[in-house]
Length: 183
Length: 313
Image 1 (cartoon, one colour):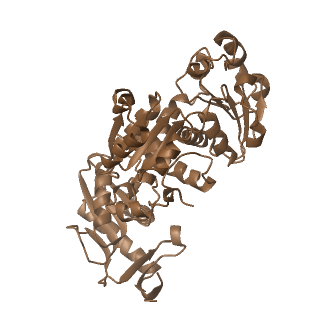
Image 2: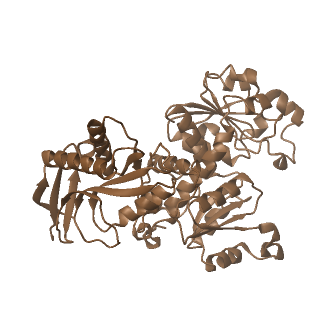
């Protein structure tokens, strides 16, 4: 599937600013960091969650737990896949019961990943609340799901692809909008 | 080749190392699920699997069923001793009947070598061999390899001694095939009547003395003395067997300091293994049981999750 980059919509600095703002918003909404934790959705939600937690600690001077969620076993499209996606570990090494959990992902699109993530989280315990933070909201929801904290709203067509790059995985930070080229 | 492109798991022999790695890697997150309060994921909802064992089993069948339940598949056991098999129904008809009920996957154990292979060729269900005669027991070898890799951090180049009745052991054969793919030095040890000829061709060295065989090994896999297969007297008596080949604490001094002990179960304490060794700190025998569930969850996920028409035959 050949892709053509149409536009870079966020660079490294823009991502940093967005995360700093979201960190402030999370603290404000939750009136501090008491019983607060962030959980990133594999893969790119993981580094973003760690980055958010670091900022929250810088602002409040208190560390909060960070976890990483693998949602593969909760996907609703497994029977549509030709071969099974590799399952990875879920690393939530703290008790989530009665915690305020902020789920973190790179792109919010159909909402199906978030649905899967909520189910995965509930199987680990009973959090007090679940909030959602995303770097990019590109629209086209297929489920009644809405983000609480958004880095950037990006109106897209369904033919376009939003690619988020994070240093830990891709060697650079940035968000691009790409288009499938008919070949 | 990716493992999911196979229709069936019949043996370790035909697997590539990359496929084994993929199975072992998938078992790691599966083991996490077993340790949670809520031991259930919805992954295989709407899938059905059946176990059909023409030979006795407790842990293999139970752990397959439990693995299926943890993944939300519907699991059924066909109890051969109370089924129409006793009324003379042929194997082929039994399989056809099961298939028409709508099962996606069948787990089969049979005393005759090659039976699961025959069945696999004659059904659209996916088939996992849970032991065929003295040929292969692939899921046992996979869980043994998982246990070793978990404890030692690797499989490559380890020295592994397999002790006991090699002649009748499908566990030994599957382990030899698997470990050889990682460049392990595999040794077999037991009475000469219980070691088949031609071990060298499998890249394995045969020993008849326990002390020699255990020199410097990382792993000792102790096999069960299969009393039910000893009708023609491969050794004079159980007492003599245990005098010469029962693994005792003093033997472990020959092996590496961090040697690990495996046993596929069920154990005959005081015959092939002493209680001190079985319950000692080097023993991973209890952990093997948990790992067996994790490995079987990995296989069920990899074999039952995807789209059916993509499967190569």
